[in-house]
Amino acid sequence: MEAKATQTALNSLITVLKDGQKGYADAMTDVKDQHLKDLFKKYSAQRASYVTEIEDQMFKLDLHPDTNEGSSVIGTIHHVWIDLKAAVTGHDSHAILAECERGEDVAKKAYEEASKIQDLPSDLKSIIEKQSQGVLAAHNEIRGLRDSAK
Image 1 (cartoon, rainbow, N blue to C red):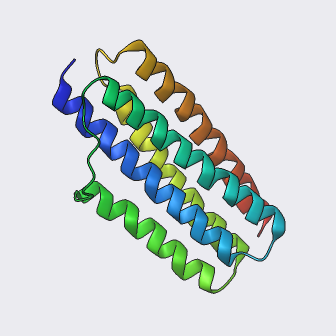
Image 2 (image 1 turned 90 degrees about the vertical axis):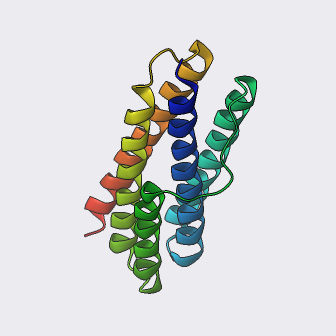
């Protein structure tokens, strides 16, 4: 296992998840629809639990979660959720869902990258696969809601 590459990939996954967690929390406070509030709350909590799972695995492998959040990828992700902030100020469900879906696209891509890491320990590999399925399900649900919110 190439420790540095693994650490980098996992740290960017954690950053994407933390951004998603915050993005959903922001969306939850700004949307009027109770169903969407509940959904965003669920996905915010899901992302928080995913972060914990990955960090636990990193500690077991003696890989250190990166607490500073400086990278070009992170800049891109942050902009997705900044755009979300702009959408929510208008309280437009369709716009909010469209921005959430963009955030989910970034998360899906991060999981695709993480799943390409060679020689992942099996525990970590199965956690990444399970979380990837959760992210995909969230993406599809958000996309479906966005399409019906037009």
